[in-house]
Length: 402
Image 1 (tube, rainbow, N blue to C red):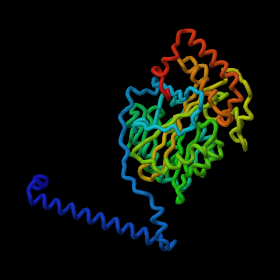
Image 2: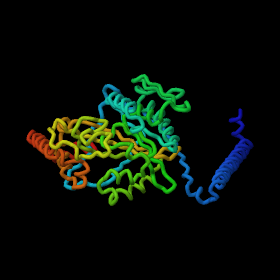
Image 3: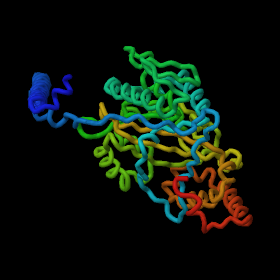
Image 4: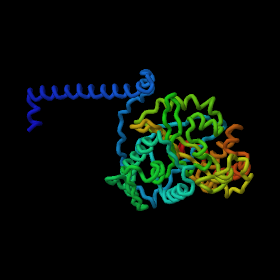
């Protein structure tokens, strides 16, 4: 009856009047909230300008439920074959960012059981050395948990189920209550149990820098959360001696973080060579608890059976409520001997490794394995060409980052 009445001229006038009143009331309430915030701030600082400068821009965006991953199975779905290296002769230093669809945010596959077990063991054994959330980042970590609890059951319905209080893992039998307060564990630890990625949250500070204030870094291989926690984005990279960061990456990265919007997700890939088979921590570079770790401790020229290809698929997005930047790090870990069976891969990888300049080669530890690795890759590439592989067809058969 009410809807019918609104079709008449008088109903339209009434609707317009009500609409105008709602706008006015929303304005009044918003203005009152602003005055209340200002009064509270001025009572402690006496400075009106500081509040206006530090207030975050409003984020008007709600994440959409993704479509289900077609035919996804925890038993049959294989890891995606990222081969994120390019032919030389020159190694390009770039952020290498590209946009991805929102439904591609989190990637799961039949390696989930191993990742899940490794993560659970690491949380138990190493605690806040690997999982930690600063009090200022609790809202952001909780928001990330809420985002995953919404995204995962929609994207992977055969693995996860949304419940009235959170999310169930149908494969492991775990149930997570994300509404109870306090939560049973650090929200970043719960996030870690749900996905194969390592996760980090960077929060903007009053001076405009972004600091790592929450993370679950359990399978990173070469870096430790305890070394980087609380650092600014720039310090994270300079402390790790990332090659050419200050001259080629820092300025662009800073601008990217400042301009990142909630409705766009970015992805990038990198790769390393590892000379041991440990996914969580590469013990070849030293004990995880050593004061300093480096390639200097690695054994030189180990046989090719000890060479592993480690590739990271990373994503960056801004969480819509808190504005924190979420950084995901999904590791793919395979023996060199396995990927070298693929067409074009040994030749392209050998060319890529040779293209590293001295700084990049030192950072990636080439001096410890380059001789053995390159000899093997050259031999496998020669075998492929001898068996009829047309190297001129590579661009049609494989495109970066595959």
